[in-house]
Length: 483
Image (cartoon, rainbow, N blue to C red; front, side, top):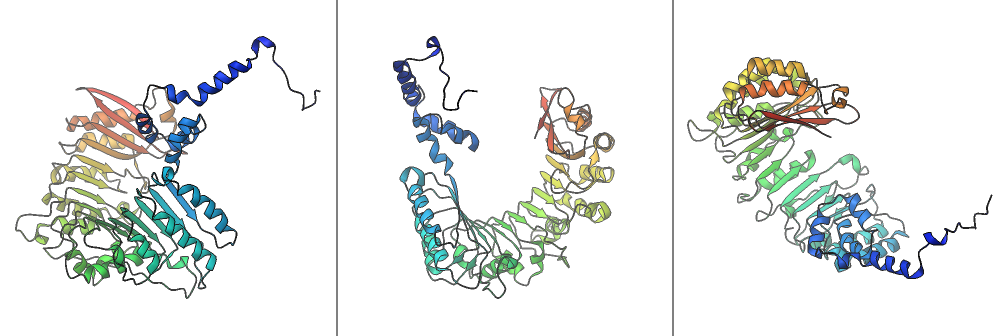
């Protein structure tokens, strides 16, 4: 065997001369300079590429590296450490990130610290303050996410200097501050008491993030929702900019909730997700003047029925302008065992000019479809079990096609989404899918002349996917699979 140190040499006809090698190197290093595309167009192209492609692009030549590298740093994260040697590594990283060519492109930044303890770690606190001093220099920052931080007065003051749109607080302690409000449009907050040590301070003063002149959207977990509702209910004037609110369904029975909702006259979207346990009770009525501009609701069918009732609206014979509803059950089997309450709630939707309806975890199509035809004749978008979190016991393609053919669909339907049972082998056949999706499409087109698309979400392993039937011309159809 030849020693490893020996190198094979190609015959001379296959070897490049030194001048040829220099010319090839110059072409590689300066190829972008001779391209016909201007740098502005290259930036537009790079902005729509996936991150893996952008990373590969930085290894092609210097010119493309200079254009593509800033896009790698659109999202940065800091996982701070209490180790004494961490500060040196952090300083080197921040020196690079603070350069104008990189800092200008940073849009999202997340800061995470280890599990909070009762004591104060000097190194960790210094690292947090160093990062806060750096993020003030990101001119195009859109979103900030904090996990486990103590937001002191000094750090809140730094946040008031930013003009970001979204801030996310996960198990953060927010102290009282007189430094003014943080100009943020979207607040996402959740506090998990199990994430802190026993006897650690649990302080949540979210008023600095709830300025009436800025806040437009709020999404909160159980603990944070109670703090937010307290701030809203104690306000002396309404939150006229707030248009979207997401709080756990349990909080609807809190004493301050109705007062807080009455101070949100422009609220357009209300979402009431379930917690770990079903609520102990539901409200049976709402004040007539509550949420007069509500257009979208996502939550239990009990509250959908109350919000759609004409008796809960101040103008006789009218209802709230709700056009989009998602009926979300507590578990995958809720509507399977108790379908009658859901059907009664669907019947009350006839008072609305409903355009979009999404129902999860239900398989009683023979009872549901006739009710939809009479209660929601103007429906344009219908989804049944079309969500990966609520797979339940989906209907088969044959049962879906038979139920649609027999009982019909709302005549004005434009799009239909279904969660169906389908074997993986049906997707591997030649042509992409078997004949089952075509049966559903044919049955739906019989009732809906304006139908443009039918999406069937099926639960195959390891990759669930959509089988999409789209309209082509007057009578044509194409089928594709989207993973």
